[in-house]
Length: 248
Image 1: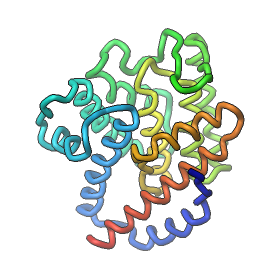
Image 2 (image 1 turned 90 degrees about the vertical axis):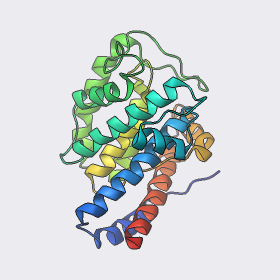
Image 3 (image 1 turned 45 degrees about the horizontal axis):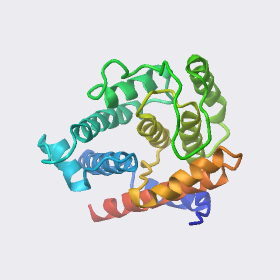
Image 4 (image 1 turned 90 degrees about the horizontal axis):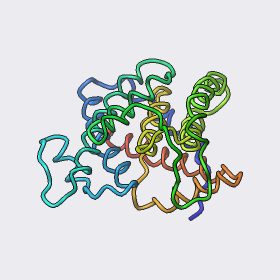
């Protein structure tokens, strides 16, 4: 499927959204909880988590386990919910540091593997479905330092949604963790959006194949499909965000 750029239309939607601001605290709270479930479900589902959206809601809000579903699926759900809280807090400031990235991974992953949570990988990794080879483990710390440092300049040059897509893509290329990279990539992407006054961008599992295809194309020098794809996801989520505000 072809995804056209939505950057110009995003500007129109952003202007419309800003007319409703500042939002009342109770409205903000309800929006936060609505998108907690949506982002946690979709981000996990893209990676193969078997919990449905309604099951995700039950696990997070009621603390009830789902019979017949893997323990790790529950742990990923609780961890992602914790990490979501963290990006909502980080959204109150400008930018982020390496320690913020490590903390997001730790919050998401500590129930699954305490020893690896919040630490860069010490081994090489293979990304299934692509011939791309991430940098060796020894180079990960320096690559992450470079990545965060370069963002200082990019914040002044890129459209906020373009910057968010860039952050996702750079982290995907470095692949700094032994597992949980995709979840952290999408959390960090959404942190950038929140810090710039945009709602989060949800990637539904129904477009998983398009998402992965766009990512793979970046490994062969064509990043346009990925940036267009993210702009479409941000556009659709913002429409949903405005729809909910109007109803409330």
